[in-house]
Image 1 (cartoon, rainbow, N blue to C red):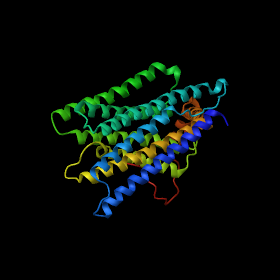
Image 2: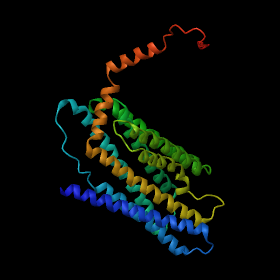
Image 3: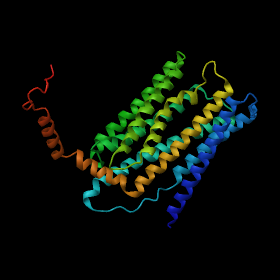
Image 4: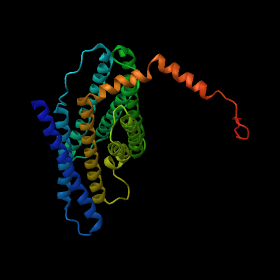
Amino acid sequence: MKSGELVRRIAEIATFTVTIVQLISAGVNLITRYRTTAFTLSPADLQRFETTTYIVEAVVLFALVLTPYALPLFTTKPEYGRAISVFYQFRTYWFFIWVVWFFWYGVEATLKYLNVTPSFIGDLGLDLLYLASTALFLLCFLVMVLPSAEEDRSRWMAIVTQVFIIAIALVIVEAVATRFGNAQPFCRGFDGLLSGVVLALFVGRFESKLLETPRWLVATLYAYAVLQFAYPVLTSPLPNSDPVSLELAQIFIASLALFFKVLLYWYVGSLMRSGKLIYYFYEYRSLFYTKEFTERRDERIADILTPGPQPAGSGATTGS
């Protein structure tokens, strides 16, 4: 076994083990809080538990950023050149998603460790990182559905610029709305909604027959998209809520999100290593972005919409 493959397997087992143990620990504490009146964690222990949670998550994400996927050497045949070019374009955006997430969790872990409440600027910085990851997921989705590659560099630069301008504009709107009114929970709720929709679009690509993703895995990753709606709970205090229960809920949500992240990371890595992702790019563009496909589609639609003789007594009517 090559050293890169060995490192990948060790990292895969280690990250899954750590995230599952942390998720179970967070779940047990949350259930204990609601089932018994005598809660075992003191405020100081709860603070340490929360700090440890975010430190572990930052370390796991740092390990994912540094761990190679151990990609094989690809063919140099010219017919696959476009698909391979798109693949590397996708991989670039994919890599920076994890870099952004590492910084988000790293900042949160530092704040928890220092027991510091983030300032107005700090909150905006965290939201900007969150929206940056959403923007990168959107770019990954667009790479998977648009007929673009390196030769469309100017078009792609325009798309990338527009996506990040929208993300920055959302942060500016949030800054103004929060500065002159108590609108931060609403703004973060919108951020979570936007992120959930984008992530669902991205996960939806895995349902393609070209990738043959197991249905249970697709359903699990859709659950991760739904979890984005909990972003306000994860980052903002809720009015009239029990502080201990809220903190335990935040720890559990963060732990569950980390598990989903690790699962997503290693599954996409398996698509990259197996060659399925390049095959997807090759076949998707060959099937749907050719002149022959467009002409055949238009002919079939015209044929479908051409009324023929109706059998007597069929009761068929035309639309009014």
